[in-house]
Each structure stands twice: as structure tokens, then as C-alpha cells.
Length: 395
Image 1 (spheres, one colour):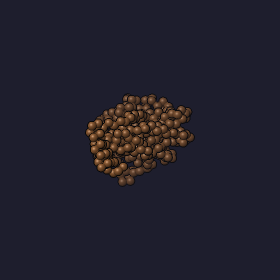
Image 2 (cartoon, helix red, strand yellow; image 1 turned 180 degrees about the vertical axis):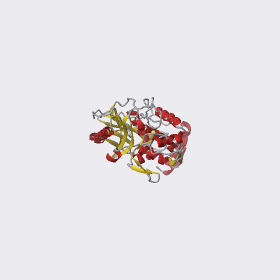
Image 3 (cartoon, one colour; image 1 turned 90 degrees about the vertical axis):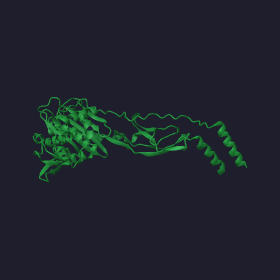
Image 4 (cartoon, one colour; image 1 turned 135 degrees about the vertical axis):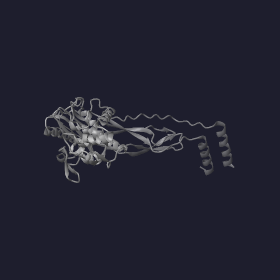
């Protein structure tokens, strides 16, 4: 009888007064994804017209010298050529095993080459291998023609891609870097680093740029990497060299150690040895002075939810990485910005907070914290059913 009376009373209250849910509004601070970072200064006495060193993952600049001066890049031009080819592969526009018939124009290329003959057929992968390892101008043109129909059409795509990457000091006239007759074919050390960061996201490039020697034509023709750092520098896995009378000696050298990948760009060196020494000096400095701070994704304590069908929601942080001085890696601090409570409804994947990473009081960057489940807003019926459940369960 008592339960029956309680049920009637609860029903009357709900029907006459309705349901009002009171809750504090939770305010989420917007997570800033860009790291404030740091710009270290050091005098490495690099013997080249331009030099640039950065971390491949974050883009943090570790060293720069005349990095925005426009110069001919010689065959380092092929960084952009190969980037477009790799993007065409990623989009499915071409395939590695596609067969390419060499045109008379491609076969006529001078400079570095693998002596392609008109009508000779190679796979896209073989031509990539020739372009990356041997810096073959004929192979680069054959790839460009296959991707865009002509070298001119491909060059137009190169310039458009440069624009989309924000490379305001870059202009291309060909896909090879041959510059005897060019007028507006130039780039900068900084722009080359940006292109290189994009290119090494494609595994097929590092597969071949890290190879010292390979062959084509069923082993009859040997390809030897123009980048000697691949053989003689610990961790070097790429990327592209170049040299002409106008450009001097250039390189975009990539190397990886302990999860840290660096890009070292040299332009306008007086000799191959000075180019390699400059690239090596920057890489040595980078690896000896810096390390990658990494914090993996993790589940955090549940965050209370007001007005929801659930009382809380699981929170998970995304992974975070940032470059930091090696000697201070252990001093990176984490600060959690999570509201005391949240307001339903909540969708899985909603950003509900952030982790702020600092070093010596300066912000390195932030990682978002996400809700790991949906939480629907509680309704009149849900409250009513809960009351009934409590009454008849004896709770």
C-alpha cells in the first residue's frame, strides 16, 4: 500500500509540475594546436650560400642561413617532381606497376640520366627508382609526361602545388632542374625543406632514397645513389642532391635517429665535399642537441556529466610530440585543462579539454582531450522511469 501511494504521489508531481533539470554550464577552452615552440640560435659556420635545418615532424627550425634567398636548386627540383608523382599514386591516378613508354623528348634529356631509349618501357616504380637514386633527368620527364601528358602541363601542376604549400619564393620551369636556359626557375632552402617534409610522408621515396645501389634492365644497368651521405652518415635515408654551374652544389638530406627525423638543406656550396660537410654539420648539431618529446594517447579519469543519461563520460587524450633540447627533455610539464563537469548531450569524439605541455614556462603545444562515448540528454520519460524503478526495487 505504501509503494502504491508513493507511485501515485510521484506521478502526480511529475504531471503537474513537469521536469526542470538544473545544471551548471561547462565552458571548454579552445585547444590551440600550433606549438609556440622555440627558435634556437647557434653559429655553425656553414660554408654554403644557404642552409636550413628543421625537424621533419614538427617543422621546428633549428638552424637557418639566408634561407629565403632565391637560387637555382639544380636537381633538388626533383623533390617537387617526385612529390606530385607520389600524390598521384596516393590518389590512385597512377599505379606503381603501370608501364610507361619513353618518348623521344624524355630520351633526349642531358645531364644525369639512365639513357632511356625512345619506345623503351618501364614501370612507374622503376622510373621513380631511377629519379630518386640516380637523379635521372630522362626518367623524371617520362614520369611527368605519364602523369600530366606533357612536361609543361606537369610543371604547371608543380607551381600550383608550390602555391598551395605557401612557397612564395619558388617557381619552376622544368621537372629536372637543368638551368642553362631557365629564367624563373628558383626556390630557397626553406621552401625545399617544406617540400621535403611533404615528400617523405610517402614510403616509396624513402624505400629508394635510402638505397646505395640498385639496378634496372634486369640487373644490366647499375644505379648508384648521388647522395653519398646515405652510405657514410649514420641514419641518413635520403633525399636528393643537385649541382649545376648556376646552382652550385645542393642537397636536401634527411636522417633519422631514435625516432627523430631531421631535414638538412644546403644550397650554393662550392663543391660536393663542402655540401656534404655542411649537411653533416647541421645534422650532427641537431641530433646531439635535440630530441623528440613524445606522450602517447591515454585514458583519463571520467568527467562528470550533468543532465545526462550517464553520470560521467570516459576521456581520452590524443598523442603529442614536440622537439625539445635533449638536456631538458625530462623537464617538460603537463597541465590539464578539463572542466569540472560537462553538459549533455555529448558525442563521442567531442573535444572536452586539453593537455598543455610547457618547458621552462613556455608552451610547447597542446593535445586535445576527447569524449570516448556518447551521452544523451536525460528526458522527462527517463526521469519518470527511474522513479518507478527506484520505487519498485525498494531502493
